[in-house]
Image (cartoon, rainbow, N blue to C red):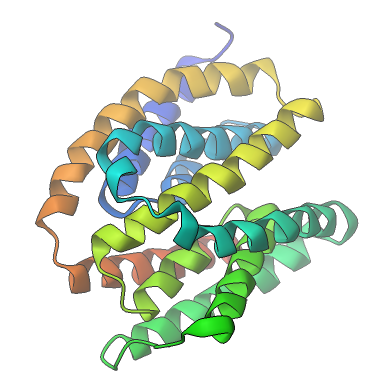
Length: 249
């Protein structure tokens, strides 16, 4: 083990907080843990610990949500993400990373504020071909933003609330989206040789802590009303976007 005591303390605190939040709403692990670990790890290591950790959590939550997952309903989002994620990764490697992340942060924050305003109104009812096209577009946007900043699941997560889905339906769609996007990103990071020993050790230290915290968080999920759940999703999306912008300053 090459990690310092300071790094392990950061990992433990971040994994506990991030895992608990993930257990409650089904994403935002990366938003929370990165607040802690960016003080003690290289940027590339943070990316792997965040993305791989979220993938582990989605796999770990499958026993709870597998019976509810609607793979066919999730397909348009996965198709969109498949095309959006490579574009996001390309933008990150080609354009100025600081500028593009600030732009994405402002965009996601504005999207979240719009969704917050819409919560007191009737859900969006979009059916047929137009509905599928919009779902693909949301998946594409989530893929692009995921490649650029790691905030990809926030986009469909907020969208599910705007469509009027209840909290279980939202988790049943968020889970396959996370598995797909994070699985692609972890594969890309490993294949590209971007993963260091410190990143692997960091993931190993964080995994048991975040899984225990996530299952504790599920108890809160079971007690939340759908309206409270949706508000929590939107507020965390806004918080994640603001933190992304502040880190670039």
